[in-house]
Image (cartoon, rainbow, N blue to C red; front, side):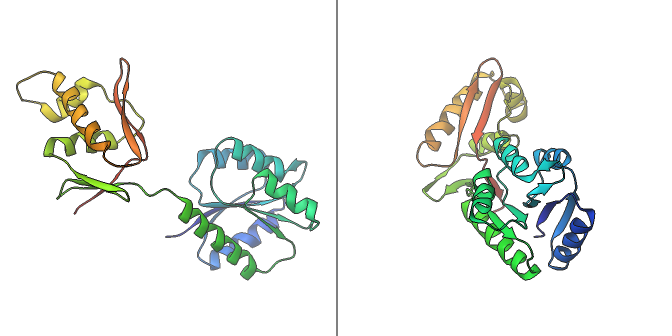
Amino acid sequence: MTTRLLIVDDDPEITSALARGLGLHGYDTQTENRADMALDRLRRGGFSGAIIDVMLGADSGLDLVRTARQDGATLPILMLSALSEVEHRTAGLEAGADDYVVKPFTFDELVARLRVQEHRSRAARPVPARLHRRSRQLTCASGEVTLTEREYDLLALLAQAPGAPLPRGAIFDALWAGDSGNENVVDVYIGYLRRKLAEADFGFEIKTIRNKGFCLDGLAPEATPR
């Protein structure tokens, strides 16, 4: 899978050179020369990593990294700088950078450092539970449960938009349309699912949102055909 990087430097020639060089190593790059525009891009997401220069004209790359981290950005960030003193490297790492690369550097060094951060990021990323369609099993590292057909359909429906409350009536219409009964059946099956989810740490739970319905809170399970 191609890694999408954001390159931030106030010198367009430098960002262009970095983009060309990293492109030859298989990276999809986007460039930005202004700190405020770079922050906006980071807030919108979609990047697997970022390379940010310490000096961004009148702005500070350190402030950019610090603000991005405060906003919740978790992607790997490498800082570039001609400043090589220990206090400079320390300041970059304390601002939230994952690595600090001193100029001049070779592309081989830069790519090697990027690969290390990508590996660490993947290793630290939580692994979602698996929701298997054919067997109707929900599995995770700590255990598994087998769901009934209706329990599976209910969980799959909630997993389509984790964190977004789904009204009881909408759930009933989606899963019990045409059946006799009333919307209380939704609460019954929510209870069934919650009891099964308590058997292992699946990484999510089903919450009741007052006057809004039910939502899946946490890391949504990934659907698989098996």
